[in-house]
Amino acid sequence: MEQQTEVKKKVMLSGIQPSGDLHLGNYLGAVKNWAELAEEFDCYYFMADLHSITVRQTPADLRRRSVSQLAQYIACGLDPAKNTLFIQSHVHEHAELGWILNCYTMFGELSRMTQFKDKSAKNAENINGGLFTYPALMAADILLYQADYVPVGEDQKQHCELTRDVAIRFNNLYGETFKVPDPYIPKVGARIMSLSVPGSKMSKSDPQGCVFIMDSPEEISRKFKRAVTDSDTENCVHFDPVNKPGVSNLMNIYAAVTGLSFEAIEHDFAGKGYGAFKPAVGDAVIEALRPIREESTRMISDKEYLREVYTDGAQRATAVARKTLRKVYKRVGFVEKPF
Ligand code: TYM
View 1 (tube, rainbow, N blue to C red):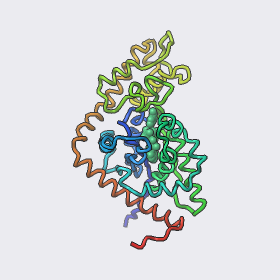
View 2 (view 1 turned 90 degrees about the horizontal axis):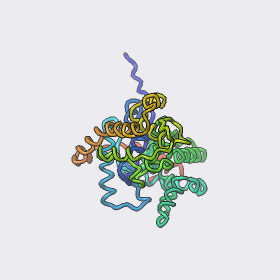
View 3 (view 1 turned 90 degrees about the vertical axis):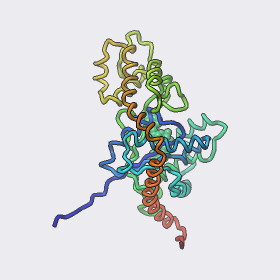
View 4 (view 1 turned 180 degrees about the vertical axis):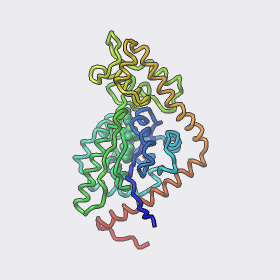
């Protein structure tokens, strides 16, 4: 008789805050890479709505974006049959483990987080406790699923490292409880910069320098034509992030959407200058995003289908999260719930 051995797949998990529409940084740094992982890994992706309220949101917009982000995930190639897609607040274990891990995360560690420093500078009137302890909730998101890898852009590396430290600390105190995860950062596209201020990362807070997945082709084209480059009189398309941050960012985007190497791009645009390069990058991005925009637009109106997907996702996620949380409750000394 043939021996059947089921090999357990490694776990991938990631999330995006539905605090704005998905942009090219989220796509190239994160979602684009997720779609390719479904066969090899057991994948969990969620809308991080609990994280979003660390910054004030308009409730109706948050609700709408949490669902439209799901449509965008699917349009980016995440098949709900092969990936567990859910809304974070539907799985209450996140908030529960988040609280517990708060008690194992140090004030000094949280104070060093650059995202906290950036966001508190931008939201000086609302530096709330959640903004500060946010990384403990992110650690809970990851550790609940015993994730092996966390596919994120460069800016989330620090939070992933803190997650590792918290997991190791907990395991040392109570015995092996959590898998210690590794960040999984793409070689190209991990840090997309603003088109208008190439020294800052692309983010929704700077709409002129930010290309949204749902932008029309005309808008995308306009944003790339206006992209800030440099004053090199030769207009040389050359990869040099220190001296040519604008052009290097455009090359990074072009490489990420076309799969071309930097050498090939330099070769193709030798002597052609920025005047030819900027619209070429815009056109490549328009073509890469077109099917995603069209599919998202179609799917957003299918509320029933999206509801089915996030219901099924939350059920599957809960089954896994519950197991880990039960183990943690026991480890820290909580009395077993009698019902
Ligand atoms: P968020 O919502 O800011 O961003 C979502 C993903 O997009 C990546 N990203 C970028 N990549 C390249 N260039 C950019 N300009 C750029 N901007 C954003 C981010 O690195 C991220 O992968 N804390 C997380 C959300 C989160 C999470 C988690 C992630 C909550 N829980 C658990 C992983 C695992 C955040 O604020 O990402």
